[in-house]
Image 1 (spheres, rainbow, N blue to C red):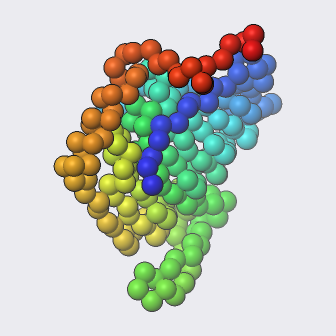
Image 2 (tube, rainbow, N blue to C red):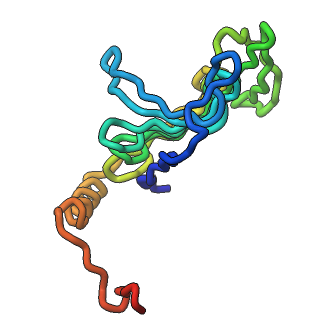
Image 3 (tube, helix red, strand yellow):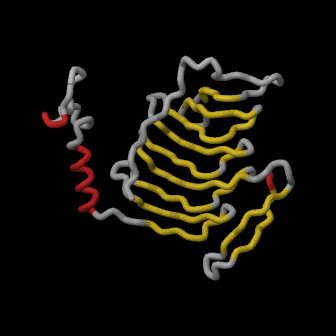
Length: 200
């Protein structure tokens, strides 16, 4: 499976429902905000939905150059489900989180024994907020090739495998990437059979 760069969705700037608050002053609905650089982390913009001050659903992070940094899913205001992280717009990580319900002091998670295959429930304090739970895959940002996979259950590593790129693979992808039109700063002209005009 090769990872590919994704286009960054942009929220509508003409929307009148952007960055609204509820009667208690909490963010509610579609929200676009910026975060300043902090502790070595770059500044970024993010957008997604709030439900009365709680992050829910899909959120996008974009760096100062307009490149996609992350697509994250939220539940209970913490990470939940699939997340994707990018380097200069190229996919580098796909992972999974499991949120814990803050309405209770403990939550339970189904865990499968990697050897026997038997399932059991594990009690977890909800003050952890969220846990890595499921498969994480790491990709080379230049070639898009899978370089590592790791499986977590309740934030504990249960499986890990690394994949090496051969020198032949690396040379092939380096040569291919150098010849891409946008890397060579050349304008791409499609073949005549693929060209059309608005008047056609």
